Length: 314
Image (cartoon, rainbow, N blue to C red; front, side, top):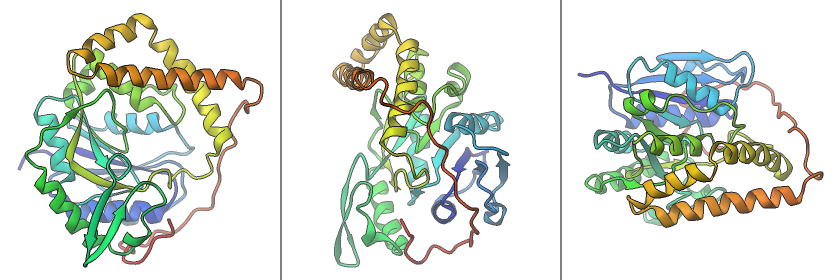
């Protein structure tokens, strides 16, 4: 049996979600793999979840820093990065790694955010949609795992779809990308670091794709509560200023040529258009945005391993 990937789950709060993510990983993911839990200064007891490796930050760190910790610990293995607010049915890992086997540098999963599904659970029609639209599946995890596992198996022959970028809630990073692209840029603040990594992947001569047979449930934003419109605007102002500096017009044109060769030219144009429109809106509100976000705080919580049979307080 060969060495498997390093799978890293980043935990900051919501230990109930982390418990569910680890439970679904153990139940539906064949070995070999190494599980790294990264505790982002939560104060929770993650050792009871029995990870292969546990890294504990003494103070909260940015998302990019925690992803880089996983890349640094890879030891030559392929790396899979997961948010803690995901549920993993069978086939998800095979879908991601299959995309890497085809030569892609970065391969993302697909979730209910990008692809809402109408499912049948025990004869009942359930809409698995975006955030806040999944109360009917709480406590029915094995039913859900069976249906979504069959969905992933049915798509096993479908090739990954080339994308300008993918979100890093569930993503696999190849050895080639680790060598040629390196680490995530820690100057971004909770946003756009995954987009930046994907852009650098394309510029490094590698490709980015989404695996249609790597469907996962993504609860979306549940592990980082309290980010209201003002804080999000602050983050965007900081991140977009840096993104626009990193990608001046000559680099954008280079990316456009690369993407056009892969049938992604229009998607790329729309990407930059959305970024520029958001930047102009933020500039129009200069003086009305906070100068720094207020840190969110919460008490530490106790994890009960395997305590996922009931409904989660999503």
